[in-house]
Amino acid sequence: MTQTSIPFLFMRGGSSRGPYMNRADLPEDLSQLGDVLMALVGSGHPLNIDGIGGGNAVTTKVAMLSRSDDDWADIDYFFAQVSVEDRLVDFKPTCGNIMTAVGPAALEMGLIEPKGDITDVNIRAVNTDARVVARIQTPHNIVCYDGDVAIDGVPGTAAPVELNFMDVAGSKTGALLPTGSARDIFDGIEVTCMDVAMPMCIARASDFGLTGHETREELDANRDFFAHMEPIRIQAGEKMGMGDCTSSVTPKFGLLAPHPETGHIVTRYFMPWDTHPTMAVTGSQCLASCALTPGTIADGMMTIPVERPARITLHHPMGEMDVIVDFEMQGDSFIHKSAGLIRTARKLAAGEAFIPASIWSR
Image (cartoon, rainbow, N blue to C red):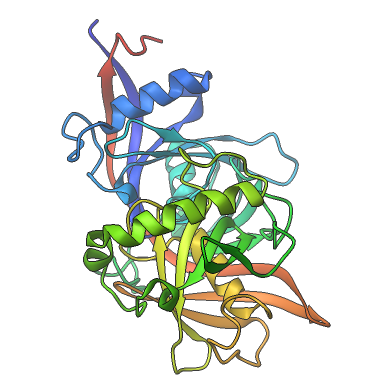
């Protein structure tokens, strides 16, 4: 046998897509697992021509699922970000867009049974230990993908998948503001280092000579910006207690700019070596929380809604994303409770993927 087959579902989750697999069908050792996933995706080529990746960071993501032994969770979701060209696999972050399809995929795989017309799936994100409740449409105990919900960055409409992220403040570093300050300065740029669902380093677009309204293509072509941003991100990671982040996609980097409407703010999100075409689900929660927190670099950029929970609209390169943030203020302290979003997912294909047996032969 010259090749090894691995069963998989190919799913779109939010504005990302990739293979969803049973963790039991893959090697336990992370080094070997990384080799398998790079071969699966085709990492090392800009088109991922020898794998099933799509030549972009939002299409080289992998979800690995298993029944959870956690008292709260139904499903454990282990995420891997595979690089397009650099032959790297990062197991540190999670991905909220890919998480959108975890519930449907777990149901399709038979890892969990449907529970009537709507099935709530309690998901534990293994990488960050975050807890998420996904509400899936399952009329007649069958996963439904058809619906009238549209999300910017994805054509057409589909059934809603409600995600409610629990206890995500400090989920990776242990603190909402892991440096102990609402603002830090690295290489002359003032930033906020924040950890809500995803540890991030967040700056004002204007401090880089940008408007914040640039297109993804304009930003990706601006290599001077990335050359300035990357050392700031690495310094921020060190100060956040994350160690050397040179080869890690975390902390992610974000830019904010003002918007005239109440509860609206302009955002750009980086993965981190190129621009996200829309907005990451995890990053959206961090950026929305930054916009709401007194004393951050976003202070004064946005008129804060009076309602609680607050609906924050993030303007990204392809449209908008709404994030519902439940929080309270204790004096000047921002207390994060939860964040919710509505996304969509769709099953695209199912079958077996093949990798060379020389990489892994079970």
